[in-house]
Image (cartoon, rainbow, N blue to C red):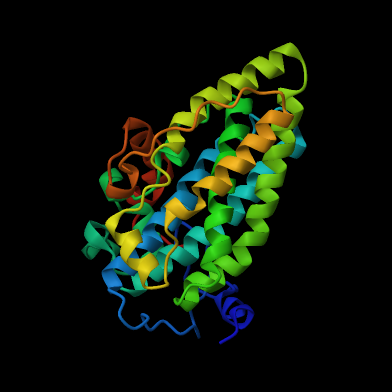
Length: 302
């Protein structure tokens, strides 16, 4: 099936009986899509990989929404909201795919039996069940740090999604085919702000450099493949993160140099803690806000 046709089938249209994390009144987001797991692929691996990509998008979207009513310009609040909605859409499809192959963990209980898989995964998992990276889980810092983080995160995700368009899994390929256009905008928007801040006033330059120095250590665990990623990359389903490291570093170096910012040394690759459930207290605090209402009223609909 052609990837555009697959993505058309992924379109979310209003229907009945919605739940929490991704709005209300949506039909099954994977209705009509071929959900058979590719030959030779462990469904548990595929589900775990979808959680990695979906959790990155969900958590970064939540971080961006923290700027609503606090951004320096009204136009920028709209941009944060639009970027978060793009990421939330990606998260919804990826978490739904994870649920379709049986990855629900402790999030599924009697109280949540009627809740769609993507909502259960978003709102009823504990922090150690999330597979997002430290790059997206870290706090926002000031506006300059947020823009540097958005530049780094969108550069990494765009490089991965550009390659995922060739995935043997039709859902991953379809999400990536649409997502590259969204992520290209996210990267461009963040890059323009980093250039503006870095090559602006002495104060904006100072803050931008401080943002780079704060974000840079979080890049260390992005380019080492977990066992799941390695197996799926060998099967033609996933992307080996080691393969995008040079591209990401080159893009970031180009932007920071043009912004008259100092480029820190390339961090040594380390074991990816976030991908295996190792998180700091900042993720717990974020999830308290994200999940609080749904956990108080698990059977509610709107």
